Image: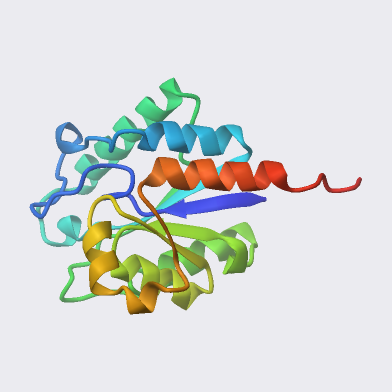
Amino acid sequence: MKIVILDRDGVINQDSPDYIKSAAEWIPIPGSLEAIARLCQAGFRVFVASNQSGIGQGLFNYDAFAAMNDRMQQQLAELGGRIDGIEFAPDHPDKPGHKRKPSPGMITDLTRRLNLSAELIPVVGDSWRDIEAARAAGARPVLVRTGNGRRTEATHADALRDVVVYDDLAAFAAALVAAQQALPPIPA
């Protein structure tokens, strides 16, 4: 099974220091939904692992979070794509649980449920905590320059030497699909 794990805010949709609190505020980054559709059409299952501390801080509730995800799924469906599952950590930043990134809990829970090893799974994020969570889970961290990515790249340049960096999710998806197509077929 080929899977990709994506952070949401700053990777798929525009982020905000004031949090994305409603479906109306959920705005996709140009090309991101098309990138997910491309991954799906190439046989990848796409999952999201996202800190959503706005829930724990009382800035929005579970219904608002579900409405944001419904909007994302509806827009993806129009393009022939989908998110196969969404892991999220609603914890308040002052009281993080085992799932809140930089902890690897969302990634390890997902790979355990799917009965997969994390080592070949790309985990795409825009922040240092995404990179830390991927490393802690034994997955392949990938940084995109959207959202907080440019700042993350500048701040942690030395620690990112072994991390592949793309301008955005579309560039990552194009490279991953091209690499998959270049592999020889598996004998039956």
